Amino acid sequence: MADKKGARVKKSFRGSFRQKSLPRGKDRIPGKEGEIMTIAKRPVVTLAVTTPVLEALKMMVKEGFRRMPVVDPGTKKLLGIVTVTDVINYMGGGVKFQIIQRKYNGNFYKAINEPIGSIMTSDVISIRTTAKIHEAMEVMKKHRIGGLPVTDENDRVIAIVTEQDIVRFFSEKIKGTKVAELMSRDVVMESPETPIIDIERKMIQKRFRRLPIVSDGKFIGMATIRSLLRFFGTNQVFRHLQSGNIDQVLQTPVIEVTMKEFPTINPEADVSEAARLMQEKRRGSIPVLENSMLVGIITERDFFKIIDINR
Image (tube, rainbow, N blue to C red; front, side, top):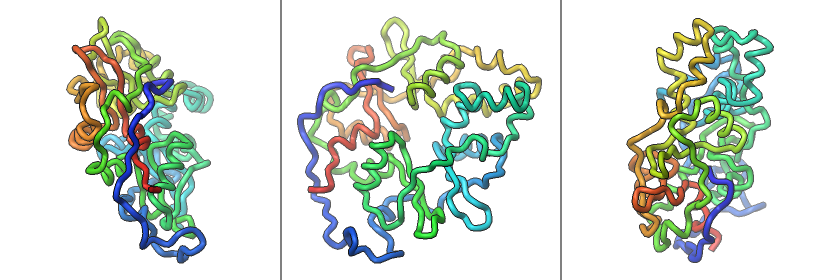
């Protein structure tokens, strides 16, 4: 959501967490579960490669999933991953929208039943069940992704681990740093009148998962990739898709999908308060306000800067 990070963190986290009992490097025993499995979610809900896009969309909306591994129905081996961003890309935000135009001549009602395999990310990044937490963190930071499927030595999906899981694990130790030291300051914002199609495109192009909506400099709420997904899953929008009239849907002002009851925080607050709010409200980010004006944003990934489990 911000192109550049703001002030550098002046304090670094030195938790008491240690890995003394965990096998390291070549000493690991093949097949034995590693540290990552203490925080990963399992069993994990997966999709078959033939699952229709519409079914995947509804499941993501109902369960609140940001991402779902796609597997071979027989072997359960990992074939890819589909995220809410992939679905929004397909619904008009990016290059995957071309599938609808080329294959279905713009007919969304038919296109919504396209197999999920057509829009999933095939070159999926995953991590083994024998991995450590800090290895997952490094992969997430390097590839700018919020979650990883966890696979066994046969590439079968066993679990999934997210930024949220990592932050929750270290939440009691994240303290002693002001939000202002960690937040992004160069925040990209949008006005309430901006059409949804423009929001989609910006999210896809910039790899944003959320965009603050402001009016006269004051924060109104947050448009997120998940709030867009919920919008496309409503009965009202689905009726438009049935008639093929997607243009009207894509021109809807973003205020219609903006989450207005969104938690905020002051820049002088401790980051532990931001972590608590994210967990309590189930949000991946918190806007930072000063006198009702948006001055920054702090995300789950920002906490990685002060989590250092190598010391």
